[in-house]
Length: 237
Image (cartoon, rainbow, N blue to C red):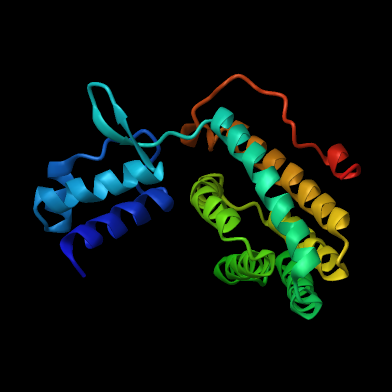
């Protein structure tokens, strides 16, 4: 692996896993010494992180890990709602029902195991990724997929920073099962409604995590904003 790619993958992983906390400085000299490479590959890696939105320039400090605020989360979820609902509707129209019935069954089993405390997080998140990939393939819209890929990078980071609540994970598995069932039914409006309900609950869980005492350090505090993603809106989708 080339030095530039090594530096990028290492720094990106550190950011995504929270080892480089939001707001921390990405110092070229320090990182080049840590990674055992020259400053040029680190500089190249930082440029890629800036383009990806995982880092940003800070006057007087150089480059820092992009902060996360609830205001940013709200903006991300506004876009996520539009993209995910469109993808689910397209998948309901174009997808193979058998694929999504199988995924629904897998999520039902995952929900049971999460309730029992016997599920591995890595396996659960791999199943979530499998559902995302199945929806992407079924929607068959490369422009939509490209937009979602960029968004998912930020959402994955937020998910890891807000930590995993076992009760919420089990609920999310049930919601994913419902999304898969609705897509399998071929009912586009039903699929959109299931996605809206899931996103409303996911956003609420992130708000709770951001407001909890042991998580406030990970989020820039910002004035509360009324969310446009509500459980009630799902009933009218």
